[in-house]
Length: 292
Image 1 (cartoon, rainbow, N blue to C red):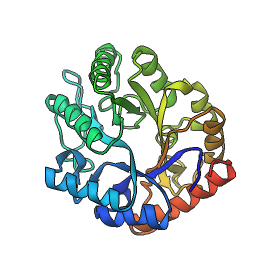
Image 2: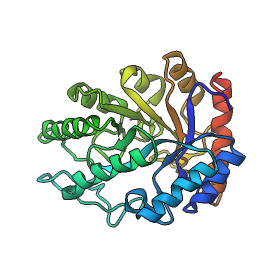
Image 3: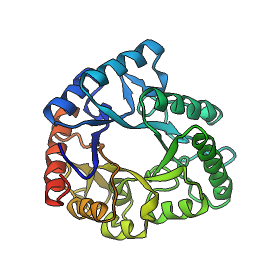
């Protein structure tokens, strides 16, 4: 299908059966791109050599190209800071790496990026602190060093604005981008994550972003809970984000990289059906935006 963007789906949002996920993305959805995070009840970084080779064969079978490695890099507590209330008990997306393992996480992520023929690796900026200011300079230095190491191997890091991490919104992310002046650190812009923190992701948040530093985009929607308090995930097109406007703005601003569906919403009963319904909403919005 012809599009302004590299339209993709994060594979494990559909389920842990990698073959089935690829079948749906390529066959049913008609897409040519996929974002890799985990499969077969393992985080991607935990796959052994035989599993990596099997994943490569599946991708070749369905003629899918990889947008990026959705690594958990730096999704850990910052050492010496108070423990974050967002620091999970147990793993997230089958990842349970420690701070001391982050060099290994980076190295493995770069290795997998080469294997799966992509030049992008997703990262974060540590579990969210009540007051990040005493540690922010050191965090930025850590990001800069990691970006430099990745850049030497032809890899760009994609910092995701994540509500459980220190850069949750566009307004927070732009400060980090300004402080970390590396061509190898770009933003994984996630309007859904920003909106879940109360930011008007589009047009407000997006207007703040340096457009030449957007290297990836995650697509999911949110809505206010019925009690009017917290936010909850919604199928694309059923929430509060103006995704048609966001897609049109990305197209207008010359963005030609990934827009990757990260459903998160599970209201249709199963991950596959929920992703199917979210894709229907996303496709309609891309078409309205003239980007599909």
